[in-house]
Image (cartoon, rainbow, N blue to C red; front, side):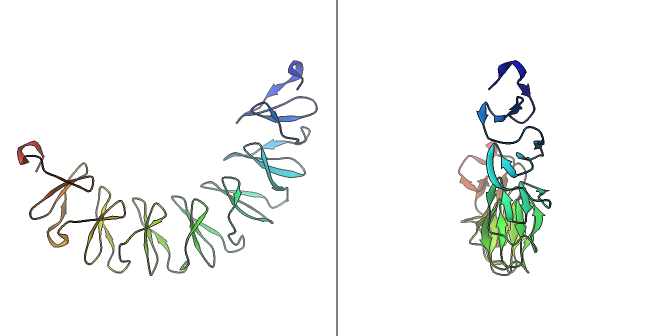
Length: 204
């Protein structure tokens, strides 16, 4: 590294007359046509890099899709890792979710195999015809009749859930209040957990 003509770029990259560096480490990229993209990606005329690591040969159709995803003729990538998703049918849905013609994905990880019925809801929830997911993790909730309430609570036809986890609450008398509080006929809850404080200490 030639400290005399070292030029700091951005996102951890720097260069001198002959080399490109990431956080001070030589990465072997061509400084004459090196280009920093976004979301951690960069490229030269030969390769694409993610956080200084070579991930694939460069191609004219390499594209940053957003939400952490990118694609090239070699596949779909999330945070620099190849996902195995179909680049032709791949579609970003938002909140880290995506799908192709065969699967649905969360942060690049395959989570379901019913993409035609898969939809992103809100508050971290999504579902397909068979399953409900919270932040990409499969919930025990039934997709049929699933309904998001508020403050992280949701319900299906038989149970109550908090952040996708079933809680032991009376579904027929359950009511969400504010700031993570909720109640049913006989109990009070805070952030999905049963509380036993005196009622005078809770805003009900």
